[in-house]
Length: 105
Image 1 (spheres, helix red, strand yellow):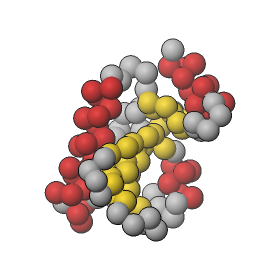
Image 2: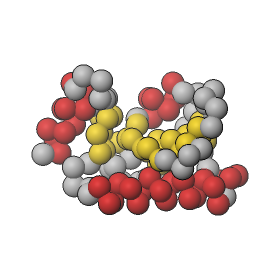
Image 3: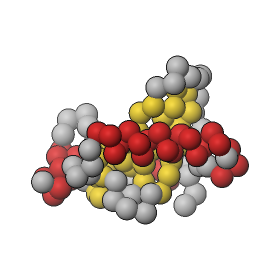
Image 4: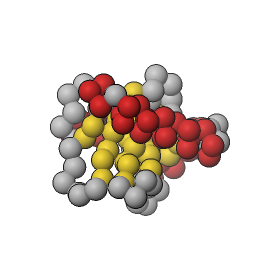
């Protein structure tokens, strides 16, 4: 199933990342919320991407375990978007994606 999900991530129209299928929705939510909590609790220690959209902050974290796949490549990076209304959305990203966003890894 994991290999099929990686393939789907690289071929699905408009969806180029998927979480590891072995993670439950609760696991994913806990990971995303922990990323936001860390970023808010210790602002100097988080990795925030600059964004021109008002009231939206984005943070990336290297988790050290395969969180999912992006662009058909398994990855341990997650990007989490935290909106002013409290909503949180996250997705797996690659080093390549982060570098295109101006991140120096």
